[in-house]
Image 1 (cartoon, one colour):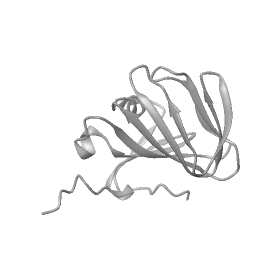
Image 2: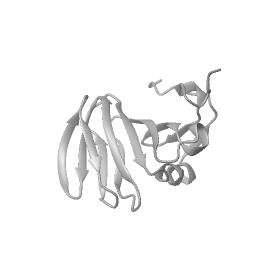
Image 3: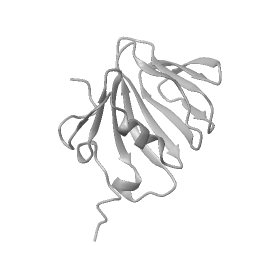
Length: 138
């Protein structure tokens, strides 16, 4: 017997749509029963991004799947490209900006989970049901 919470496809989960891009949380306590982390695919629109913010109680890892961006962590700015990873300590102020005209795709991991719920509750997003939108740009 296969556990459906072990294998998650993008079309299996809702999409959070923002003016700067979209997110699909593939692993959260609600989706996979995970207790120690959450993970999702973030797609930043060209020249858009996440403004400076922090997660006081969660570490974050960003892995660049494709595209190029400008990552700032506690005032240190660096260009990031596909194949690179960024570790953001709990409480560190950070921002991610897409530096090109193509989408920037990231794998975002929070440990412990929690910040994904803050994004979900943001009044500036639209929540699209599972299957309504893929992580690819239209």
